[in-house]
Image 1 (tube, helix red, strand yellow):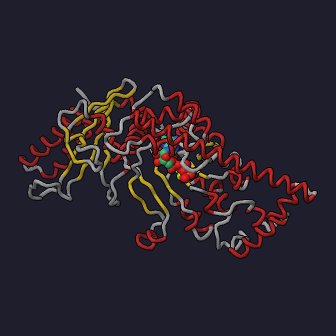
Image 2: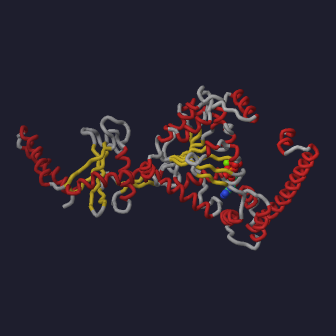
Image 3: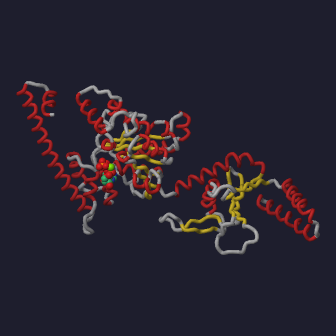
Length: 494
Ligand SMILES: Nc1ncnc2c1ncn2[C@@H]1O[C@H](COP(=O)(O)OP(=O)(O)OP(=O)(O)O)[C@@H](O)[C@H]1O
Ligand SMILES: [Mg+2]
């Protein structure tokens, strides 16, 4: 006899005694018999029952435990339950979501131990029967298990169910792309506004050197599983990536691929619309865990060239003096006035005390000019991993050809390999040529278009190199005539 049967039998006997007492008009004995029956069966019943209600008495929100259990049981009951409930999914990709029907039972096994879950519902007495779900329907799940497993179930199994339920929620949720806009704040009062994040880029479609791709993916996955490690070493659970390289080399695409790999939300932080450090902090504490906070083109968002010195009013060279005066005019000096976002504000944003709230965050900065950034901003520990996105190599081209044309090898590949070495071409340029311009363009036609574009790029690159060489020779000639060093020329021409 299983746990559920025991419990049902106890309730049945208590009810019978209650009816019997009513018929016998022994009203004074009614509570006594009911209590007695309950006690009797509790004594002999070796099973324990725990109930999880959808709503608690003092809350209008669905209980988080109930919701997690609901998800866990929906996934696990699909193979075994005889009666399932179907509901339409909020996600467009799936049409129906199945879950355990009311009063259905499911047997679960944990470390070789059997437990019984039942989906139940109670209704307020004296109401008419309705076909539609009513507000007074109270749903709950009950879990029944043998009392000798009490410790294991309470300390381990329930945590397992809740963690699994949360993990299912993370897998199924529609991820969001947030942005900070003043307009959204004035409308909704929220500092971030969002849309559903549906970027199709993945590491599968991202064209990178194979070793580099493997390394980045391993790094991300290791990070996402390292909660205990970060707690042990006393570090907040976050990681910084700096993606740098010429335009069109796939920096933004990589951010999307990262988010899709880890199933994180993306917060696209537009620094130029943040008025001061306080606002920056407010934005940070309003981000959730499991997210990527990205600041694109960080060099354009703030002038971070040696800004720390400017903030501290340390001016060493003439160039810095000019920059300092400009900064004063733009109100970028003095981190104490709190009127502008400053470098120290940004550093605090990345690794100050507040950044530890919520956990599991990745910061990504992208830039076309690494050398423009203040070393403090990009030092290891803050930006843990520096990733250089380069011009298109032959390996990268092969991935693009496979993705866009379905061609893995071709006689034209040899020519393309040679040309790619001779001209600096970005993956974005290659992609542009690999995309068919009309329905009549086949893969080979696209490869030929690419070859012709690469030949043009090569001619342009040679012409540019010749022009630069002429300029360089001209400068050296001038220097010799003036009898000065290179610095002199720089000062004069500058
Ligand atoms: N490595 C790559 N793999 C696949 N596609 C790429 C890659 N690099 C660029 N692309 C293609 O080129 C387009 C532009 O790339 P992306 O916006 O990621 O470049 P970026 O480095 O962020 O440029 P910018 O510095 O101008 O912001 C993308 O839409 C994508 O189709
Ligand atoms: Mg970009």
